[in-house]
Image (cartoon, rainbow, N blue to C red; front, side):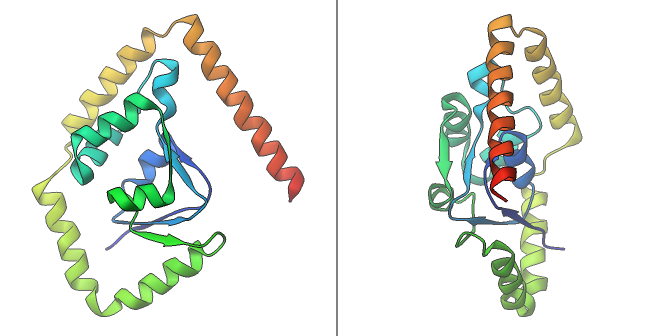
Length: 167
């Protein structure tokens, strides 16, 4: 099968990591992407480095993770991490259109993605080791790092409350 992921809104940290596991990524133009974990002393520890490095190179993966910079959907398309841009609110329709356009080529597309997994496999051993390094890093966090984390969670909660009130 060919998997399709859709970003509507921000895909940061773990949300972006999980999105990277899809074969095709569609993003609405107002979506933002990034790995902010470094600002509180961590890194995205569930496979992001492996996924980004395999798609666009280790140098860009490191830049994303070390800088904590937030990227636009267009920037992610330009580097090759997003495949299709959709207008805000049109992501689901764009995914449906992609499925319709791709029906004739499905077997070839599926095979290409399968070959990609064969050429650049991500093994369970690799992911286990990454999680071990991440867990070790967690154990070294300082109070200052935890305070930054707490402020980020509070900001997300406020943003979520603002969005819910607007709906």
